[in-house]
Image 1: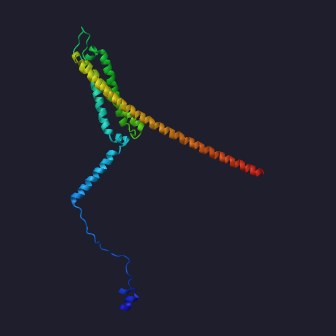
Image 2: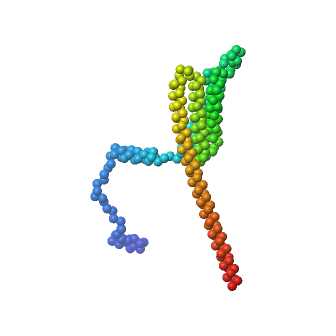
Length: 252
């Protein structure tokens, strides 16, 4: 039997080469971390990640793309307010005809009593309505909101809509407020004008940033074209010099 196994290629125990892998047992004790400590470490890690996300500014274009539905709701509400104010202006409408004071049923009381204020009210209200409808058209048109120019147009249109609604509110108070409340109305106007000025300053800052980035891209494009033209001219001049050199060499 032994001779048969050896003939088949079996080895004896002493003929087996020793393995090169040594299994060592660690003398260090295994430290088990409590579950509470693991939970605290996880909470600290999550807070660090949140702080990094908060510290890192989010891309404005991505934010607009994600908030498309919210902007649609806001624009729809502004359009609804402007439409309702247009067909039902402050002070209501005359309920019946009166030939003595030339009043017609269904016409605006504000237009008869305060015609100048009514004209300004209609102008601001119409501007807000058109701006809000333009925002809705921009959002449903499928234009990519990742382009800065589209985001800037959307921002300007939204600023116009909000500003027009604020001015419409002021003109409504002009027609509804009593003369005894003129002082309070002036303070309110000053507050709204200051707020609109801050919003205009913010819009100006964004416009300057957009123009600055556009100028940088334009300068880079011009430099690339200049370098391309220079390299092309150098290649052409080198080619002609080589041709002239060959012609001169052949003539000799």
